[in-house]
Amino acid sequence: MANSDFIARLQAIDANRDRAQALPELELPADMERPAAAAADEGRPWWRRLLDRIKGLFTRKPKNEFEDAFGWEEQKPRWWRRLAFWKRGIDPAALIAQGEDELAERWPLRRKLLYGAWASLLLTVGGVAAWLIIAPPPAPHDQSLVLTLGPAEIRATDDRGAPISAAPGELRNVPEATAGFEYETGPSGGLPAAPDAALQQQTRNGLVPMIGKDGRTPWQVYGRPFNDRLNRARVAVVVTGLGLLRAQTDQVLERLPPGVTLAISPYAPNVRELFNRARAKGFETLTELPLEPTDYPASDPGPRALYTSLTPADNEARLDWIMSRGAGYVGLIDVLGTKPMQDEAAARRVLGRIQERGLLFVDSRSSTKGLGPRIGRDIGLAMALNNRFVDADSTAAAIDAKLDELERLAKAAGASVGIASGMPLTVDRLIAWNAELHRRGVALAPVSAVIGRQRE
Image 1: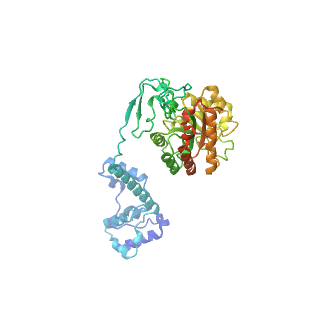
Image 2: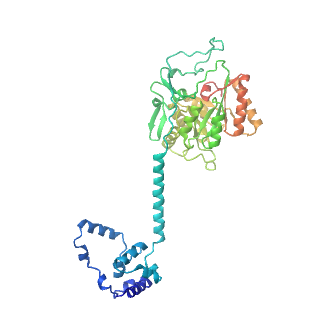
Image 3: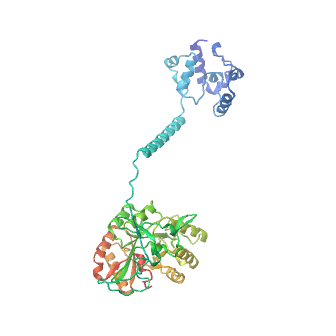
């Protein structure tokens, strides 16, 4: 049979593809007869026959003997079809000359897209692997100094070295329970590196703080040392909401004095790195504790907040997750809501858990119905109480007025606490206020230094 006749028959098959099964009378050229299946398998290893059968499960069966003879399968690419023609003595150029190049099976679009996706994936994996191979290793950390603190009696003195009286627990230059233990201090003069392995416990939700077997508590060990020899009134300012806005967090860390206490959101990306960075700059830190608002769901405290509708076990698991997010912090501060603090049973469970972990708690007192101060006093929890929201009115005059109020409260009661945000204006006013604070007989103190000194 001439090539032109055979091509004509192929055109007929292509034009009547839906009726291809109805063309059994078409005959192959004598030299292209398809051998019987048994003859085709004769002499082939058993494992090759097994592979062919497995491959056949995933391959479209030919519609007729012509498709079978020439590999006329819809999933075969064009080069495969041309190779099949050449092997059987048919000149592909003849097909092209007759405008029948489209007889060679086309790749479906979906296969092109699939192959493109695989190629992109391989290129991406290869690029990442190459980057890992050629990227320079990270720069080593500066060598740190290990300072061993021996047992010592801590005394306060004035400028001439004369001892002065102080209430028990008021002086915290070195916590008494930490005497005799080694601490690692950073080369930049920041706080000791954290966490202390002896003050951590593994839970299903991660590593959380714990009271050491020697009685040391995380809030005392991780607190910023504070020893005011002049025994001045103390004002603690807690800056909240850090970690969610990078630019705002950076300016707080770079500009504010380290006497300010920083509260970091558990939802912040790279949150543990942020805690370490704050300690390296000398800041005492807190972890924010998101609670259910009274107007929920109009106000959403996030996916890991504590809710009164959850079981105690679920809230305990969420609290452990929040406490596992950072390291080296002294305690927690409630944010975003107050509803659990208005429920006696829920508040006792939350505050009791914080006390069991050796942490302090800062009550924002966002609601007058909160039970935190009374319950904290009942269970002996180390607690600080917010006295003023510094920038609730975000004008310079209003911020300055709130800071003045904190000074007056501190002079009257011994200590006061204010809560502020990291807004640029607030940062500016805090810097200006702190520059003149020592002249007015008031000291900027970390929040751990006002524990037990406030009056409700």
